Image (cartoon, rainbow, N blue to C red):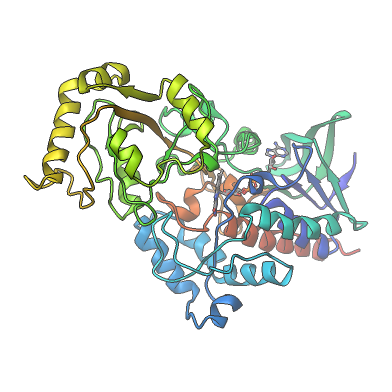
Length: 477
Ligand SMILES: Cc1cc2nc3c(=O)[nH]c(=O)nc-3n(C[C@H](O)[C@H](O)[C@H](O)COP(=O)(O)OP(=O)(O)OC[C@H]3O[C@@H](n4cnc5c(N)ncnc54)[C@H](O)[C@@H]3O)c2cc1C
């Protein structure tokens, strides 16, 4: 049986930088990746990054540090993240931005900036490349390719890790399934960089209180790394910290997959709402123009089905900036003509019948909003942007879903990123990084700008370097 110092499972956002650093130490490294290509979620991620103390911030005269970043995060998520893991990554994230820049990262000239897609930081410390996650991939993949060409490195694509072997409570090997069938390798260190479970509806339901999954995650985010560690005795955390992203429209009628290009424009700082957002019974549940996306996400999370109808009329459609700017004219025409979640109706009773909303509740929601628009009273939700009444004809409604970009629960790790059992003891030789440790470990119950991709890169590099160095000290070549 082949023996390696380190096996990195997953060649995505965290796995590639992890392997790059591990190979540099001289340790013998195997990387296994289930897909036939590397990159993982970077193929679809927006790739927004965050880091305090970067050279780019300094060049713009922005004074920022890890303590200010930590304080901002804990303000946004009310201290629901893991402070010890944040303390590991935040002081290194500025250097991660510098590392990308030194290796040719195609930074958007607008960065660093304050971003409003997620609850805004108080400092300009969000960055992204001109091609989003693909810009990160374009920088990291060549470095990874060069590392895999070293004599102490091996990459097996289309090869899935299927199980962990333990001896005396410590990891001693891994079973694999690849193009040549099943095999086993021996190793004292496995790093699970396998991502989240945003494409595994059953696991999502188990870890999120039975909720239905609407998702933009990559199909490879199947939670298999989490499941194989669980089978080896690992504990999970973060099951209570789910929050949906506000909000998406599935690509196909009746489907659960959402593509980012087709996301509705629901950020008031980018486009003020002209529509009403109504819960499935027709009631208001949110102040649509609330500048805090965190408030809107929590309001959606509190609804029974994490779904709402975006209700407007033909006049709004004609006057307002586009609600679905990423859809082509042809896609929209087809959706209005054929889809059950794009509804038109001549009047309130028909709209209620076609959407399942309660006609009285729907009527009341429209009536109170229209009165506020006409100055005859305050909007019941405290909404300030009241551009025009919604009366039809025709009335229109589009079904929107609370959705998943990253999954909150994951493997419980200690502050060396060693996976723990439910009794808190470490499983020696088993490590995890990236979304496999749960999105909530760093973001808590919230969405913190850049706090998935950047820690995946940063802690991936840190872990690879540390375990590689340990391996070489234990068994020098
Ligand atoms: C549409 C979208 C937009 C996003 N935008 C942002 C953003 O702007 N900023 C941000 O910080 N975060 C963002 N995120 C989240 C972020 O991109 C992910 O959390 C992060 O990229 C995950 O990195 P990872 O290394 O943990 O997993 P991945 O990059 O998904 O890599 C995991 C790899 O492991 C492989 N794998 C899985 N199981 C196995 C197995 N059993 N054996 C072998 N290989 C396996 C997979 O095939 C995959 O290649 C976004 C997510 C989505 C879906």
